[in-house]
Length: 232
Image (tube, rainbow, N blue to C red; front, top):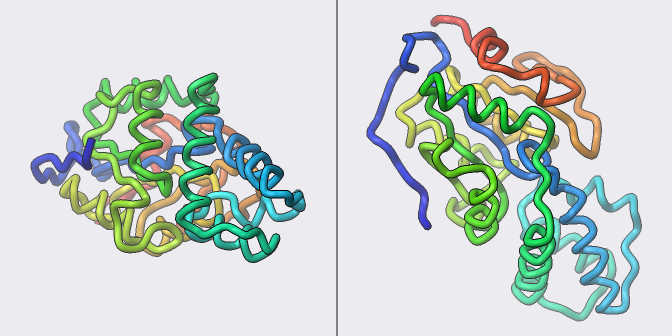
């Protein structure tokens, strides 16, 4: 599956100021941030290395190249980045094949956005092969566009994935609401000029101008998201 780019649109069906909703995947819609760390621990254990739990906050939410590269350097493991990437993706696919828990509120939010025909994109630093597996549980019908980390020149924390998603939906980034769970994802969305809702999963995220922090996705609904965007 490749990214789906629909015909441009400039407003939601009801003409509100909110033009699109852009959603992160791991830790935001699916409870998988812990899965990535568990797989990293298991893979490095097989390589003869023990990961320091404090490193979890360094690698969370980042692109595979950054997190895997950091762990190779930190441990001195005798493995190349491409080799490690394959092992991590294989381990994660095996893990989500056993169970893929959704975050509280995710099913309800996706259904609400679909029912109101809100242009919605899934924007993840995970690779396409992982996104396609997860989409079978989330429901591909909920997304007009999906963006994978290995499909853009620069992934999060760079703004490219969110700029690509906004352009694909024909939306102004300033009139897009982004939901993210990590500082890396928040940085990417803010650099793209979007309004951000942070739902921290592993590490805390402080409030900031243009950023709203909530404790759970259950606090986020369409009315809440519309309230983030003012007419310009």
